[in-house]
Length: 413
Image (cartoon, rainbow, N blue to C red; front, side, top):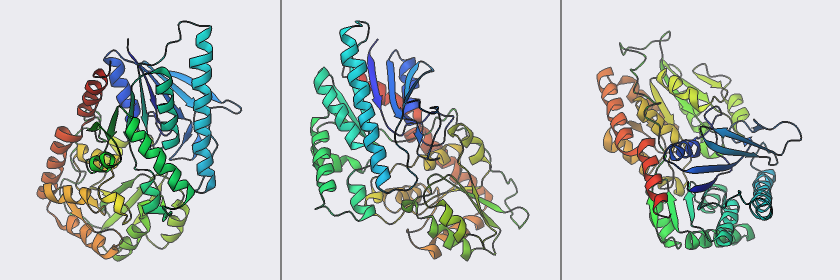
């Protein structure tokens, strides 16, 4: 049975909030005869707390649908300051300890402990991916790199980090080595293909984020009549991170402009900006904030809303380098979408007529997009949802992505 180590610090299981890409891929591969071992952090990125480990416990291993899932302790953090970098470093150190102790030293005494046939590391954690690349050299096994976020470009674009800084120079060097040494690079956004090739990637495959269409099933719109009033408002959902890059202050400014319309916006999730956002919205009666929920509950929650909102700041990288799970989940359920993600995302929504778009950082344009969708007939909104579902089935479904992973990995045995 071929063995794969799958490493992603922020991987989650369906009982937790956040993306479950690694879990769903691993589950599928186990069903296809693979031996999959996952290494991830127990510190949940959405809730910013430990979820599996008890006090003074540094590691926990579970068998989940045949997957050997390792939860590793890391240092905690609440905001994206120096503690975040300590969190990343602690995962690297823990990973190194696990790899050395379990796979090298113990192998001298227990012959039944086998090395992996393939090592698959998933970013944005470049240092952890770099460690995985080094271990692939030690074991002389194929190394595959999945690029979720383009580090360090996102730090340059989003945080205004200087390219001349020591950290950016170090990460840039690390990035180029990873692309060059990886036997295969997997990108989640089609626009990233040229980016990674220019930096040394030799073989590149596009395998986007996407929903399990058997779980995220097509659902009728909650309002079958299509008329809205104060007692029966047009309900919009935003689910996901509440961070600076999500630009939710822009959404609140748009909510102020439509406060007299029969529209509500519900925010589900957590992040460093949530408290500020709640304070900013105290005077708004059309805005609601709720706690994060597990991925397994999202299909039902999405089906209760009339439209889904996706929002990001005006950052060059976001025009070509993002693959938002929440958007493709909405496609699968059959919901019209409202987007402020300029570039590839807005272009796709406009091309297939899946909803309405607005530029980022333009609350007036966002308010107008919301009003346009509010005034769209129920017949046309149903058609938007039907087209979105077809796109999910034909391009973004987890079934297509999982098959792609299986075929790709088989080629390295």
